[in-house]
Image 1 (cartoon, helix red, strand yellow):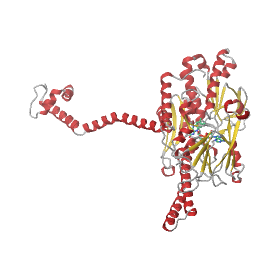
Image 2 (image 1 turned 30 degrees about the vertical axis):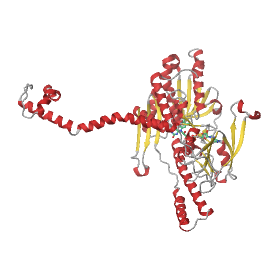
Image 3 (image 1 turned 90 degrees about the horizontal axis):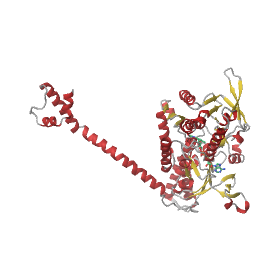
Image 4 (image 1 turned 60 degrees about the vertical axis):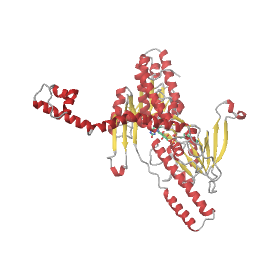
Length: 568
Ligand SMILES: Cc1cc2nc3c(=O)[nH]c(=O)nc-3n(C[C@H](O)[C@H](O)[C@H](O)COP(=O)(O)OP(=O)(O)OC[C@H]3O[C@@H](n4cnc5c(N)ncnc54)[C@H](O)[C@@H]3O)c2cc1C
């Protein structure tokens, strides 16, 4: 074997092979072995000359060139995003002479920004109104309180999104407080932040705004289900300030507990965090917090880390109830292994300053009342209706049953209206209230609104200008085609992803048309590989290259230095 190996790699033997008939004097082996050797060397030569060499060359070149290609691609994207081109200004009329309609979009969340990103904004005078002047990438919000991700990494200003559109977009930082659907008029209120802008001592500024088309994408507010004490004593996890409040309160609890005697009930209370809601948000936050305790607080403050406790309370019998049974069992196993206390089947009845009072259903069906002391209470349960949604639905008879959200038809048009659309969490449809749904609805509405603009322009040409003959027929045919172009919205479910702690995630993924594949298009996985998939999926979904780079850098920073344990 040794000789054979040498025959392959010895340079002299290769010279020998190059001259057929020449007998080697270097090879101290039998004829048979020499001929085997000849064959092997010949084959190797053939392979290296014939099939392998070009392939290897190609692979090598591809490996060398790919990083350059990616670098160039990302450099182009960064340049493109940071240097937006000129925009078509807002005008009173289109080139055809038709009046340009005003489209007002309420909100700067998943639904609203999806419209903005996909709409040809030259077709309307577009105005965005939202009290939040940035888009927030909510799926990574549970990573913010622990400092795994810096909050600036997951926000994108509305104005940068607007500036990248072909037609000029106006943005007003204000809250819509009234919608007059009869006169197409909005009342906007801006809460004046600092003394410098407070006019005549007023805290708010109120203005009105006319619209031709209105899109309501105001989302939802946390739902307390009317449980006493929740609003006063909980931290929600919906917006950035919520995340900052959670961080501050958690750190406050640690610092105060440090001063208290070990073993005291008050110290134990302060060091216990209760998370209510076993959906993806609650699970992800509890998991992130436990990671933070185990990975960072344990290193710098081991005494306190040993006493910190996370309790996850869920009213249903399981957490992540929308996932399949195997993933639920896996998740609950991982959470328990991490040391998170799971309280499933527990209905919160009341919350006071220091305790959550819950009723847990026993196996015999009886209810057991438990009092859970807490230092930090995070409320991560369902969605409630915003005041502006109640205001709108109270004015339209067709919306009188809209207690859980606005009722829309299959084209996202508000029932009882001809020019108001609604999407996302503020609506009540058969689809779940998720970013995925809101984003797809936004894409759909953007193309529907483009069709509406074209229909409007064609109708103008047909009825308000003096076209005749072939030209008129052509416009009529186009109008007919455009009117048929708006198809009902169809949601394409892609699946659910959730981080469950200790660098593990679960994914219940779906692709293709479910009715066609009959469950063959479903994959349920969990573990470390899924965690990397979770990371890459979310990085891909972030709104801009800037966000993608910042989030990746945040993860690298945590891997290198750990999370910060200071109380900012
Ligand atoms: C922590 C967290 C994690 C989540 N993770 C996921 C996930 O992993 N996957 C997923 O699919 N979904 C996830 N979701 C759900 C998802 O974020 C929502 O379904 C989605 O944000 C709904 O989009 P939206 O546009 O309807 O509302 P939002 O994104 O909530 O946007 C509403 C907008 O309306 C504005 N607004 C409010 N009131 C007014 C008013 N009166 N006038 C004008 N504007 C107003 C708000 O400022 C905001 O800009 C998560 C939610 C949270 C809170």
